[in-house]
Length: 98
Image (tube, rainbow, N blue to C red; front, top):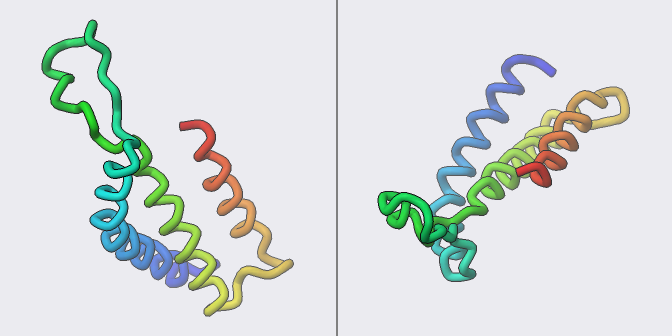
């Protein structure tokens, strides 16, 4: 993959993330995907209660959408370019870690 293609994907992923974040965060709060704080912890952590914990899904969706979208535009996702498919798969599978 060429550097220009990579930078295009990076820029578009950033733009998609900036667009998705204001839409997704209120949705995650409404669905109660907030962080719970234990009472034994420091009192300063109590202000974090209710902070959405699934914000990483925004990044995963933006990476997937832009890579597939730009990839189909530049036609670099095919049988000969397995590194892109492997990279997307690894990023997508990392969501199970944290």
